[in-house]
View (tube, helix red, strand yellow):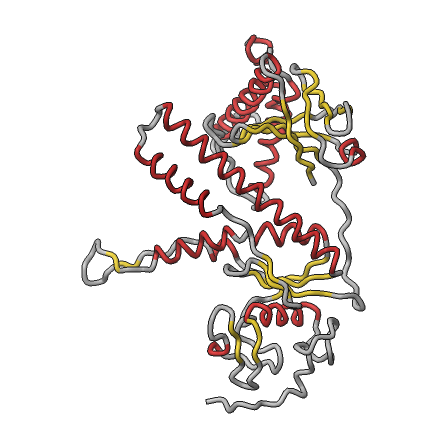
Length: 407
């Protein structure tokens, strides 16, 4: 777990030192990646295997030869090699893709500070010791005891904003209890999060004015010449707007998950394949005309993909799992199943918000009904009269009688 704080380096030598560390970390990472790409199965018989230890020995020899590399910090440069080694470990464990080269024009640059030393100036400000840069000031927004408990840090630059991420031990999450209050959570587009007790949460986005400005900047960017100074300025403006939106959504995720973790002891969520759900629409070749494609609804699918990603389904479930006990349940038919009698029918959900059962005539908000089904599946409340929450919706399905004939 990381505590992210804003960093305010002084203009001049201190800012130049931080920029130099970012450049050196990116260069060493890319050079180490290129060196590892030379070691192939056909060459392993007559070449020494490349590891993080062997690359650090090569780095020591390179620092003896090149003055500009020796001017940087060996801790920062070795940290870049450790990041590369961790990237390959994740790749071989199939947790991520093959490592790629870092670009100088990338939106995020950074480096590692291993030997963490911090000190407090006053109630609002603190300082962190950075190699070759000295004491760099940062703003304190968390308890100082949590900051002092950090073991390492990573300083990053994203769209003109310097931050420091202090690595700390995660807070123990709350475990579910069979006698405590539990909740089911349905994730959607119109309502980003809907709970089984009828609460709705909406992920923030751009305001109407910000959306107009964002679209105008994108159109302006498409007309500008590549490599020009105007293009770089427009990219910087767009980057700041994206960064502001990311901060807004991140704050919403933290506050919403904290509220849920403090209110309930356990939660059940759908096991959604978000990566598959947000894939682009497959092209439909015309069998009669080779090289011609039929309409595939690609524009509508793109809009749905953007709405799903804007709702922050994955990050929300991840942070909720960090704070409380979360159970993932199958998502099949949760929006079509009646939470009162268990009747499953596609016509039960008349619209995005209206649910009317064709079997028993039960009416409820569609998202809330789906959240109740998720809760019942996760905590096995199907045949418990009254349910743990004690609402009228979670009545025993054995006693539910059909009032509408099924056609």
